[in-house]
Length: 137
Length: 137
DNA sequence: GCTTGCCCTAGAGTTCACTTCATAGTTTAT
DNA sequence: ATAAACTATGAAGTGAACTCTAGGGCAAGC
Image (cartoon, rainbow over all chains, first blue to last red; front, side):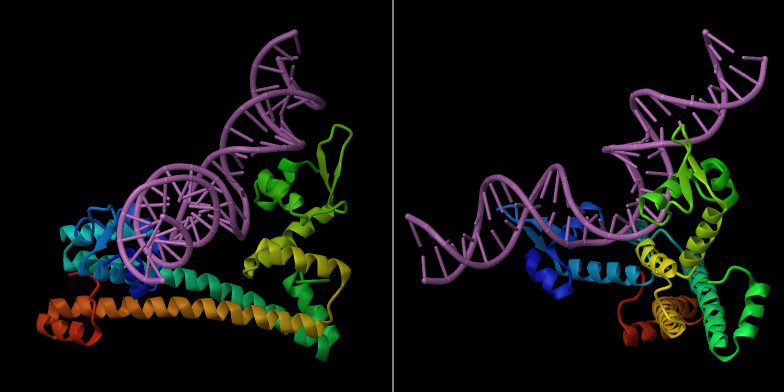
């Protein structure tokens, strides 16, 4: 399979695929060269890219991915280690979610203030005093 | 107030403050030059940077911030327009949270599979068949 | 008057995951 | 034979929000 065909099949650009190779995410099991130097991809390449996409979908950087794939290839981890890793990843993402929750809290307070400003400007003033540093004004 | 003093007070680097100025987030109300060309910051600069931090804390890019501050300075929006803007921002952040929720779903499935692999490898195999494409192996 | 420690500018470097570009060789169709 | 369509390489560009560097000018203490 040539590069454009693989790209179409996987919904990637040929540039991205070459980039993954350059970054060491693909090796000779996935891609070899024809006599004209064109890349020729095996069926394993498709599976590899699926795996790459899955890791990306759970918030892995390519650097992490590279490590994870290396360990995957080497069968380097026990099931329990993998469970730990998954839990760590979950915590990481839950923390990012918490940041967004904090943003939402702030936005909700801003909204509350703005709504109050319509209904009861005096109470809104009081709210400002308690909270300090309004969003605007 | 000189730049380092302001930086310490605000928990920013002097580079960041100069960067904000270059990006047009600070103007002559906030910073002027002494005869030796050193920047001299007013009390308004502190308030300005607080405002900048607040906008950043609700997920605003500097570009958005610049626009928001310009409008804020010009008193360009009604309360209702601001309410709309806040609601838009909330939706934006809620959508980002949903992406993380999707990641967590995936991670939870991976975890479930890995736990089952300990308790009942056969059931785990079935799970793989239904889901297709395990995390490793 | 010398060192230390601020301050200035302009510009390059950082990170990430690509994309885009320039240049060139290969294959396929007409 | 030639043009269109594919492939290759290496390097530069993208965006965001800074950080860091180089090369210099002021300021304060001894």
